[in-house]
Length: 139
Image (cartoon, rainbow, N blue to C red; front, side):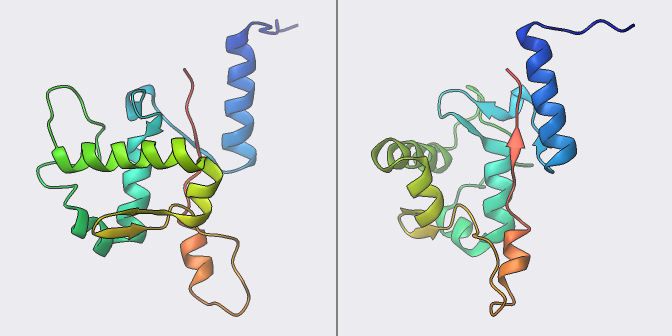
């Protein structure tokens, strides 16, 4: 009879497994998660670039940064840091739910952070809704 892992790591493994296999979440890597800003940079910037490339060009975030890799101390991308500071500030001021529902304005761009459940009348909404990224990352 197999033993059951009753430690916290066992519970984490069960939760991650359930979210990824039953709910379609992507499993993130610890290296993708920026602790300073409390965000999975890889998935955040992949979502924004995939759904709103014209707004991302306005921000100039990808100048000199390739493959949506998280920032490390050796990389200095001022525009990217400014955006992450703005995002963190908006979440602190308005809360995560409001930021997801209403997006953020980061001059000169306005960004949608989540696409709502598709309506039958809007033919574009299922395409954008499918581009939402739900992720889970273990500690």
